[in-house]
Amino acid sequence: FDMFVLAFVERVFRPTYRKDDFVLGKKLGEGAFGVVYRVSLANKPASKREGDLVLKKATEYGAVEIWMNERVRRACANSCADFVYGFLESSSKKRGEYWLVWRFEGEATLADLMQSKEFPYNVETMILGEVQDLPKGLERENKIIQTVMRQVLFALDGLHSTGIVHRDIKPQNVIFSEGSRTFKIIDLGAAADLRVGINYIPKEFLLDPRYAAPEQYIMSTQTPSAPSAPVAAALSPVLWQMNLPDRFDIYSAGLIFLQMAFPALRSDNGLIQFNRQLKRCGYDLEAWRKSVEPRAGADLRRGFELLDLDGGIGWELLTSMVRYKARQRISAKAALAYPYFDSEGLLDLSFMQ
Ligand code: ADP
Ligand code: MG
Image (cartoon, rainbow, N blue to C red; front, side, top):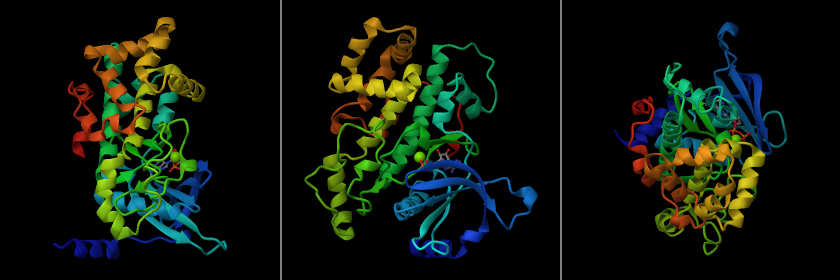
């Protein structure tokens, strides 16, 4: 079967939707660039409308987000929330809105789960679907955190192998998919596809400063403007190698790892304070550790203890992700091959992907 035939068949048989097809439910989020609702299809009987879809009404960046989601759906579907459809809705307002529809993946983002006092045991229950009757302790927590990190890195590796940099990786944009019992990435509104030059010029103002790597520009300033699509397609593997833009996401993922290991860094204030300390240490995690460990409270010490398990392999991985220089950071693929993930982790269901 030819790829073009497949694409054509898919286009013809995929359902298309319009504004009136949706019944709005609860508001799930509201950012500067759009509003997100839980919705269901209007043609379903009222009893079956459990809000099994999610709708984002997006402003200017909606077109890019639709493009990214279409690409992900074809190239690395398991990395992100299941995209259903996107279109320009221009019936009501003078300026159109982009409407994006996904399958409702689940109630909780990693941010929600990390806010719970039970974390990481609440995640273990969700991944395994049952409460474990085992003693609580560092080893078990480490296994759960390791499983979450593996799933996040797996999803990131999918995106990066497709040529997409997410640029807004944070716990709020990692959703637990109740269907596959794994974590997936959402919110491709700030993403860049370097292979075809879509959204090539970084929009720094879109980046969340709490999770952003220290480099200002994701591509070096020596590549000042977006080349035309065919030129970019030819150049981009080279540019990718030169600039390693994917390592921006790795830094953010490293901060998620850090927040999972250290409860004190899970709050906004905790993270902001950490960022200030790390900056003062020249973005050198080892230096940060040396500066805080001697006067660390029980909570911080426990985090170091967790990362020091198995000969400190977790700490080693963390310090390979959170580094000042992008090119010194490990890639998602290399991180997945890291011995930290050798021990079994939770018996999760990601093998089904
Ligand atoms: P924003 O631009 O507002 O950050 P997001 O795409 O991150 O938009 O979505 C906002 C919130 O909506 C998320 O934090 C999550 O709680 C919820 N959400 C988004 N997509 C889904 C989905 N596919 N399934 C379930 N919840 C979702
Ligand atoms: Mg978001």
